[in-house]
Image (tube, rainbow, N blue to C red; front, side, top):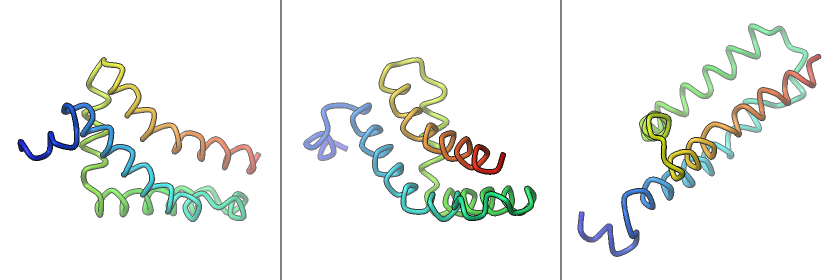
Length: 102
């Protein structure tokens, strides 16, 4: 544990670095999940693809859900920053997909 603090000043900095890493990793798969070329597919197909894709990604990266739950349960500025980093891209992509569809 002590060696970790050579690189990070505190726990919030560690969690933020992890959130950034996870957000970057999710960015690599989001374009496939929310491909606007499929905006007019049946809604069940879109939802299934997105839910299955995110579920698989979370299975491979279990820290994502734990970190999101932690950030959601905290009322600190650093938790809000991490929550936005993890959550806002998904909201933005869903919004973009629905706008293209309708």
